[in-house]
Image (cartoon, rainbow, N blue to C red; front, side, top):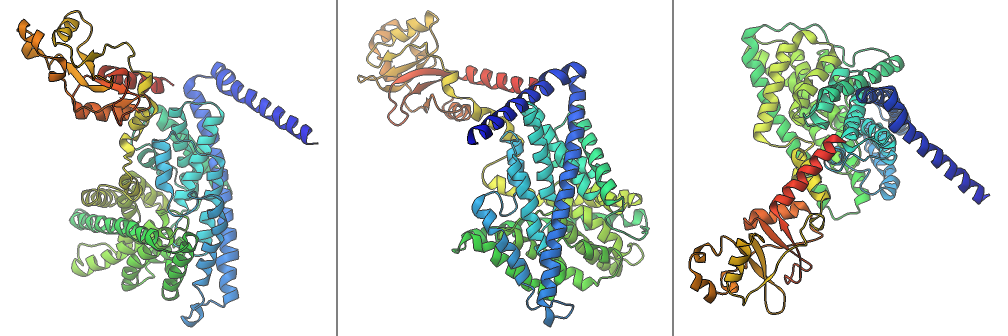
Length: 601
């Protein structure tokens, strides 16, 4: 029986392998051109991302029903303060349910994992497996379904990106094309979950691809987002997320207030980012079992929810209340900071989820608060507070993520408020400018910067890390003993044997190097060339590399030594046997060849 099963699995793998090769290397390439292949693949990824999002949302709905709604009913939680005393048990139970997943998949479940996803896409080649996709469906559903203060949008983007990565690898596409398909999957997922195709495209361009794209890339993102939105609308309907009343702003005279509001949003965004990672650091330093930290965070969120239940979950219901003008200004002011606290407690302690929904909530509360103050101070020039709440939805998200187009179009599509495009542009751009001025990193790149990861230069670093010194060093070199007269070096240079030579001591170990610059002053004095030894003019204090070092390490050594060649040794600790010479020009050429190869792929 076992042998038969193994034979069946081998046959299945063989057929799958043959089918993949047929699709990726023969059939599609003969039937259509390269761009058509990209578009067809993007269409499939968009459809698959939409289906994944539907499964994600259905899973979340089930968790909300079983954990939050049934849990409140069993505990007798109601509208009164006294009836909510046992409310902290629900998010604590949700956090406890993550423990088996955390033990089985360490490092893959807990906390705000979207920055890791960005690093994997932009620095590590975009390889994302089915395990990551499944975990992003299950873990955030448990956290949010039990009342944790988090959003589904970041996990949804990872789910869609994972779909794109899996499809790209299965069809045998290059690393560059796989990155595009990851972005296409993320665009489709964001478009499907928000019913916002343009925002999905902008999200992929600004956040996933870091603003670097070609016309073909843009087309693939648009196709994926469009297909995903169509499928999502056919299943969930085509209703806008937030229903807002008609607002009329006063015109040009209100422009300074919009700019001031944008600055206000930018300051709060920076506050949110710093508090978010400060609390994460506090939880990291706690001397308790790491699996119990999310439970502690859930209890704290539940305690806050006893008095302010609005902080639980994604908060979309209360955003609708604020946009309709049915929430007091003092409550909104309090919820700005309480939602920040609840979100940082949820994700900072190790529960799973994203920050998009909390950002929309905080932006709406901040906008309602600012709008009320503005209307009080400038009654003749300021629009209704609800209007500023609507602007705050997009402006705060943009400021937190440093992605102005994403927040702008997301707000417009979620509210269908296209008539207010000018105030949205002014507020959003100002908010992003102030946030970037006060803090270089967004909420997605802050933790990566602390680890020394720069997503902008990450791809170049990835190329340098992939190449080794042993692959490009020259094994044809001449060593010179330190006791030899300097004339030997002079003759070798004149004969065209090189401009830099390694110098060895009596035991054959590396002493340093001698270059044409070192002997320039004795070139014209032949009698000095016979008296002075090589060791007297040798440059000894130089960095060395080994054959196993990367090009990145080699670049660093060249910048320190300011030499055109470096010796390659087998033991860098005692500068032992010389096994080759590494030329600066060879390093640059190898790097350029690898870049061109990846681009052509």
